[in-house]
Image (tube, rainbow, N blue to C red; front, side):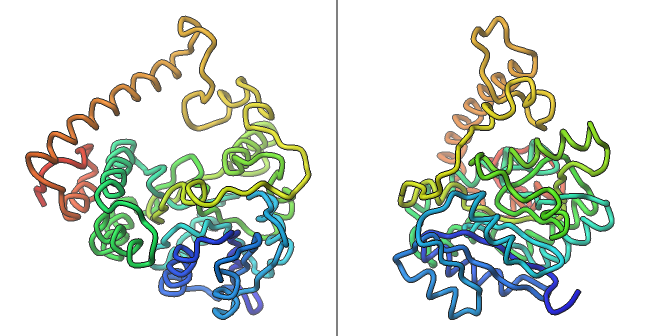
Length: 338
C-alpha cells in the first residue's frame, strides 16, 4: 500500500484541549502506518501549531468551512489506501484502525463506523451508555482541560483499554446497520468514486447513510454503511456545538436532510424511526408513535436513575463492564453487581 495505509482527516477550529487529547490517544492506540491531515478552520488558540509540531499535514483554510467541505478538502490530499474521517472530540480504542479496515474487507462493506454512545449492537446498552455519560457530565461539571477530559473518560469507563476489550469480546464480528458520524472509514478509491461528502448538507453522516442505502437498494452495487459492533470509540458529543460559533465562509447552497430527502425518503432508507414529526398526531405512522413512547420511557428512566443515585451513589465502572458482558438492559443507576 505504499508508505501510508490510512489517511486520517480531521477538521478543527480551536478546542486546543480536545486536540491535545485527540493527538495523544490517536498515537497511543493506532496500529497502522497513518498520515494525519488536519483541516484548520482559522484556529486562534495554537491548535494548528500543535498539529504541525506533531507531524500532521495542516491545511489552512483561512476561514471557517463547513464540516463536509472540510472533509472533502482533506480527502483531496489523502494518500492512504483507506481514509478515516474523524471528529477531534473522540477517543479511539486500541487497534481501532486495523479492526475497522478488517471489517471493511471481510464483510465487503462500503463504509464502516465503530460502535459508540450514539449506537451500540443492542438498544438497551446504547441507552445505558447515553444515560451514564449524561450523569458523568453532570458530575464532572464543565469539561475544559486535558485533565478534565481524562477524568471524565476514567469516570465513565474506568480502565479504557479494558472496557474496549470487553466490547470486542462481547460483540466479536457483529455488524449492525447504521453510521456513527464521529468516525467513518472507507477506502480512498470508494470515497473518490462517490465524490466524497455532499457539502450542502451539514448532517453529513445522515446524508451519507441515506445516499448509500438508496444506492444499495436501487442499484445493488454496494453494501450500505454498517457499524462494527466490536470496535468502540468514545465521543464527547457536541463539543463543537458548545464551542465558539462562527459563520461559515463557504458560499455553496445549504440543505437540511429533510429538504434534500423528504419525509418519504427518510422513512424508507434511514435506520431509525422517522425523524419528522407529523402535522397531526392522529396521522403519525406506527414507527413515530413508538419513538414517542420510547422518549416518554427514557424520561421515566431518568427519574428512576436520579432516585437510585440518591440511594446507592454513582455506580462504578465495574457495573458497566458487567452490563457489556451480560448484554443486559440494566440502567446506569443500578447498584453494582459485578
